[in-house]
Image 1 (tube, rainbow, N blue to C red):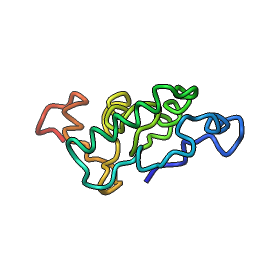
Image 2 (image 1 turned 45 degrees about the horizontal axis):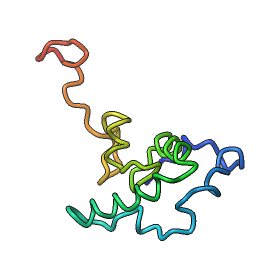
Image 3 (image 1 turned 90 degrees about the horizontal axis):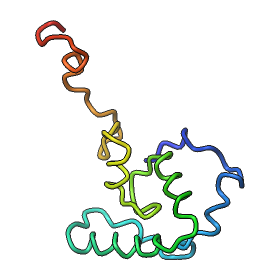
Amino acid sequence: MTDISRLPGPFELYWGWQTEAACRGADSSLFFHPPGERGGPHDDRDEAAKQVCAGCPVRAQCLEYALAAREPYGVWGGLSEDERQTLLGPVHRTRRTGRAAPRRNRKRAEGVPSGRR
């Protein structure tokens, strides 16, 4: 589930861009694949969604929102969830459980030799 604590709020100033989106009124299943969809059908769906995004006048605002909100699913601003995650860096939460991902080798990464934990 998306963590909404990072969202700016329900102000027209922040959300008005959505009324100009090329995807407004489109079937959301184009942008969000069903659970378990893989391979060709998944890739075809992403490409079709990205074609809609390519001509969108508010693509930059959409992508900015998706990155700030860390939208975990779907195509936003012309990027898939995997492409957005690449921009954001390491995953902080796992998709399956929603719990924080384990921090392996934390001490070693901080410069403490192994065995001195």
